[in-house]
Length: 450
Image 1 (cartoon, rainbow, N blue to C red):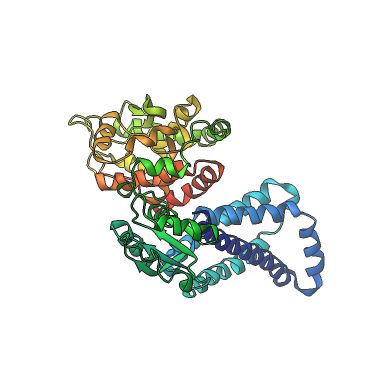
Image 2 (cartoon, rainbow, N blue to C red):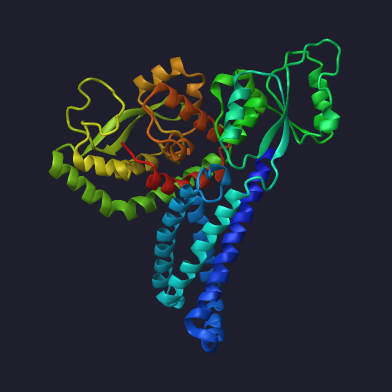
């Protein structure tokens, strides 16, 4: 699946490079408009004396555009999607640049220069993405041949049809081989596919030998579940069995991965800083809970952590004191159990901040599957295949599922959530850790809590 993902990576690099060039070009144009031909050269020279500011601006641009999902054309369903996220980028970009300018004294550039730079660069970035959306056929999608049938093939087709710029398209669909001695993959050489997706094969099928030969000659051959995972960021748990998890080889080294130690270091540093920075917000929120609904301010609830070990999760209380009298129940939209201040805290995830203490204790990580209650998890383990596999890493304050999904209440939603979690576990490492942290802010802004 690395070859399928490589095209998406090239797209992101191209968009990031275009953003950097637009931002730098807008800065030069802003200096010209602001100071005219007479003062342009001296002002430009002054800016160039501070490469640290230029690097800071480019990194802020990259980080925030990643946060608001502006480097994945496959997720841009409509122009409004781009406009809303670019508006969020504009506000946060302006804030970050102003903070940088006022916190670092040598970077004390005029506010007018910054305003003109952003006023020129952001519309240009929107235009680039609109043009990309309109020319979604470029670069050309890879030509794929699907072998076999089953629900996974229909799911693949629906995903491809719903995307303006999918990484591959199904050019031909062959039925499952019949072992009748005929060529198992007829006409494959004439089709010259970039990708073969195998949905259905039997043990001992001669097609396997033919596909192995094609693979060694440069044609990418993948299973349908892997293709679906690459396309959606989810592992379809109803379409795989235990052998699939072993055959991929991606899950066998999770327990011994050296990233666990690096992740723990990042968790300790980041959680300490976040707890320090957000402590004023946490104090105000705790007082608001106390005044509006009395004691207790915090509540502790048993959840399952690494390898299914129980621990006490800490949150700010957002529901009325008797809300758990009838047993565990998932929150519903406009849930009457949530008091008004609690609703505000849940909307902006402020009630989750005390979990930073769980991170410092080592019970959680900043990034991982959300921990679930033992009784609820036991029910999901009976209904959803491979649910217990999510205990192979520490649970997280945020995760791959959280940045893709709103609040989940139905079993079907939790199955999709598990599919995202398993994909993240499969790709457990610094890249997944960083991308989840970057995109969490975008999820907070554009996904409502309950």
